[in-house]
Length: 139
Image (cartoon, rainbow, N blue to C red):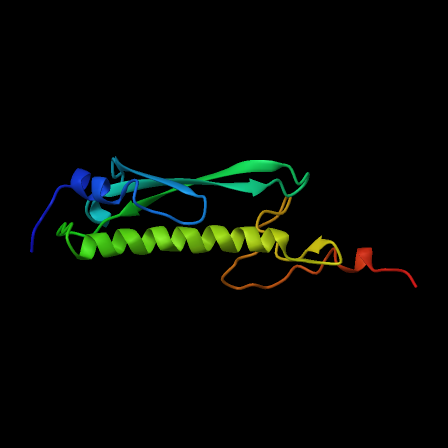
């Protein structure tokens, strides 16, 4: 098992990730919860999108933190954990966008960030039908 430092792992991954027209950036972060594992990496990403209210083209930004396992093994387990987390971020972001775009009669029934309420979870996928029938077509 070859053990490398976190900066080497970041250098191996940064600039090599590709998914559609997204950008990704990894950097070392101070782990505020050292008891939760090894080093922590900040993952920032951005991608083009459309404003859900106006339809204008915008850039969507996000970031998350990944706690890497100990012992730190940059050649195997740690890289797998990091790549799995990046993949999970992509899936969550795509699910979020799909929830915004999926509509019934012009009503977003899986709103990931409704005004004044709690978000519909992509894990439960229970639709919010409260506004659905207010827009029913007339005969």
